[in-house]
Image (cartoon, rainbow, N blue to C red; front, side, top):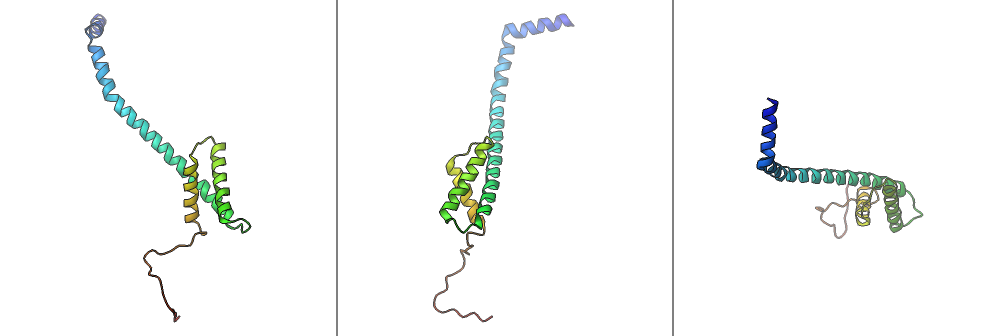
Length: 130
């Protein structure tokens, strides 16, 4: 039996069948591996953005009650806090993305008034009986 397996192995290598099988297997497996790598990268980016959003929410909430700072300075401070915390943890996120995350946190916070886009503007004198 062992002798048969040795001869079969030698035949597979010398005839090129093993090489052909390896090439076809690689062509089949390579796209699957690339897809898995893209999915892992996408998942990591999603988790990083989620972490940055949490940092931005906390930074905005901590600066919300400070009336000594203007809105623009609060935005800059929150952006700096998020960027420096991400850098301290070893994460890299483009500055533009950090600014977008902080802006989204400001829009979700109580600092930004909520406006109903479907409400029609009231003109003239409005009397509320209530």
